Length: 143
Image (cartoon, rainbow, N blue to C red; front, top):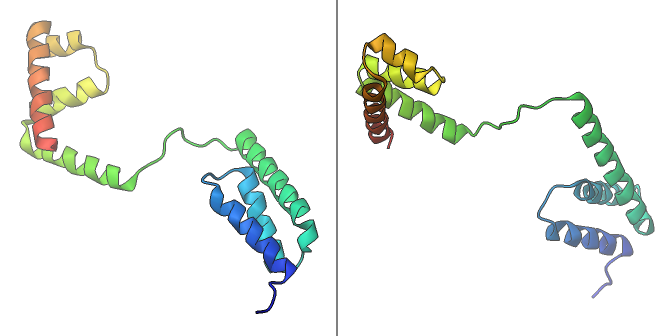
C-alpha cells in the first residue's frame, strides 16, 4: 500500500481538529481557511498552522467590525414557532368574542387595568376575573 502524502496527512489533522469542535469560533474559521488553502495547494503542510492563525485573526477582525458598525436585532425569528403562533392567534380570533380578544390584546400591549375596567364600566377585581377567564379560554383554543 502506498504511503499517504504529507499534504493529505496535514489535511486529515485539520479535519480531525474541526470535527472535534462543536462551536463556531474564530479558530474554527481559521481551520476552515487552512483546509481551503491545503486543498488549493496554496499552503505547504508545514505552513498550515500559520494559515490557520491568519484565518482566525481575519475572522476575529471581521467579528469586531460587525460588532462595532452593524446592529442586529436582539431576537431571531424561528419560522416554525412563528407559524404556530399565527395559527394559535387565528384560532383565538375566530373562537372568542371580539370584546374578549380586544381585552386580551390591550392587556398584552400593557394598557392599565384600571383604565380598561373604567372603559367597561366594571370594578378592577371584576375586570381581572374577566381577563383571567379570557386568558384561560385563549389557552384552550391555542393548545
